[in-house]
Image 1 (cartoon, rainbow, N blue to C red):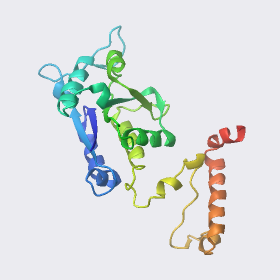
Image 2 (tube, rainbow, N blue to C red; image 1 turned 90 degrees about the vertical axis):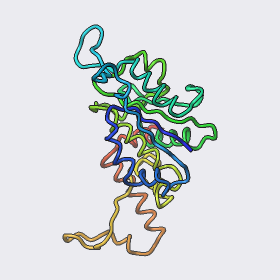
Image 3 (cartoon, rainbow, N blue to C red; image 1 turned 180 degrees about the horizontal axis):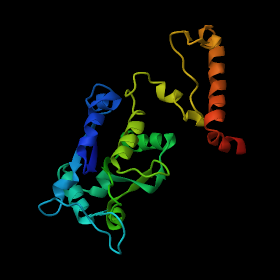
Length: 248
């Protein structure tokens, strides 16, 4: 059993994610070759005072509020380590935080992540910290966080959406999660290009006919057309993906 712990002040965000779609079916055991369990840890359960405060104003002044390190430590040690009966936090758990300074997440990162945490025999369980407010006290990050990831050069109101994005993109590579095992191999960004255009019935739509090659029955020609279209789509919409290839 591989366990994932998510530390958040908004656990309700994750309920649909955990029950719907391919991820929901994976977690319920209806799909996938791995048993994966997600546990939600509400950081407010470990907050300070009658109002269960989890944040405070930044030293030195400035806008917004900062997650308190002592509250996050309690949530981690009591809500994850003690609750999960872990003996050695560094040996058994990998703590992940989504932040602007983190390693940029992409298709290759997702596959590497899947390999590190769901294929290695001695892989660790995962703990995700969902940031909020103006950020997290640096001391907690230095002492407990093992890896930081960024979705890109933009800011979200919280880490919940980022964590769901990371999990969704990585879990789909787990064997048996998708109905067609070749689906991930044909996705955009595989081999550094976008996917080819897709068509289905009706064959004619608003006066536009599907490409004749797709109904020719000639599999070699279809494969060649699709490869050409991948290149054309990438040139048109994401030429930046081809920059490294052209420079080699």
